[in-house]
Image 1 (cartoon, rainbow, N blue to C red):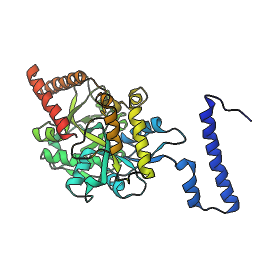
Image 2 (cartoon, rainbow, N blue to C red):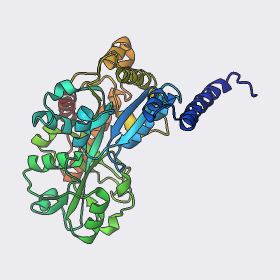
Image 3 (cartoon, rainbow, N blue to C red):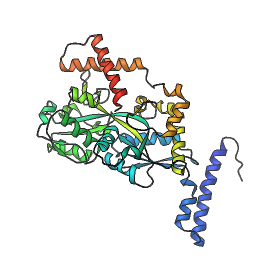
Image 4 (cartoon, helix red, strand yellow):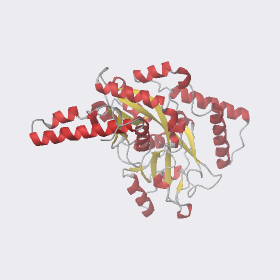
Length: 385
C-alpha cells in the first residue's frame, strides 16, 4: 500500500473520501438497507457546498462564478456550485423562494426595480449582499442604415428575453431618452441572425466587454455600435463607459470610441438562518473569497475583477454580516482599491477627451474635467449602481 507523505497527503485524503462515498453507495445498492435520502445527507460531496445562481452562458457572470470556484473549492470542505439561471428577474425570485439557492449574481438596476415594483414583498429583508462586483456595458449593435439611437424610434429592437437584465436596462435607457421602440424578445444568438437578415434594426445586450458574441463581426459588414447619449437623466441613472477598438478591433476603428453606459452587479445572499449549515457554508465562502481576492487579479481570471472593490457599499441594502465582520477586521486591506485612484482619474479624463473628439466638441479644460470627475465620484458613492 502506498504511503502518503507531505505533498501527497491532501490528494490521498481526497481519494479516500471519494472511495468512502463509493463504498457507501455500493453497500446501499447491494443490501437495500439505506434509501437515497440517507445517502444524500451523509455523502461527503455535500459538505460545504454553496449554490451560486448566474446569468446565461452568453453573459459574464458564469465566468465569474467559475473564477470564484477556482479559489474556493478545496475538494473536501468547500465547493461553489454554479447554477445557470434563466433571467435576472427570475434569479431574484429564485434567491428569495427556491430551495437550495444560497447566492446569486444580479444586476443592481434589476434588484432596485424589483424593490420599487414590490416584486418580492419585503425584499430588503429577503436579501443581503456580500459585495458589489463589476460593471457590465450596455451594447447596442445596429444595421448600417441606423446612424444614431434616434433612428431607432418605432423600429424593432431586440432587448433579449422578458425578465432579463438586458430587457430591464434597455427599457429604462430608451425611456430616459424618450425614444419609443418595438421590442422583440429573442435570445442573443437568434437576435444576431435576425439582425443579419434585416428583420430587426438593432439588438441590445448588457454584458462585460469584450463580449464573445460580437467577436466574429466586422466593420465592412456594416454592423456598428450605436453611442448612448449621456443626457443628464441617463448619467444620473447609470455610470458612463466606453467601447473601444481595444475591446472590438474588427468593429470599432482606432480613436473612434463609442459612448455607452455601465450597469452594476451585486453578489446577493438569500435570507439564511444564522448558525444553519447553509449560513456557515456562505460564511466560509466569504472568508476564502475575501482573503484570496488578490489572486483573482492575476492573469487567467476575468479582467472584470480589476474593477471590484470589496469595501464598496450598495446603499439601501444590508451587507451579509460575516462579510461586514471580515471587512471590519481587515479595514486596511478592505480600503485598498485594486486600481489606484489616480489611474481611475486618468482613465476618466481619457474617456472625456475621446467623447469630445467623437462629437466634435471643444476640448474640456482641466477644471471642467475635475468638476465632472467629482460629480462621477459622488454618483459612485451616493448611488452605488
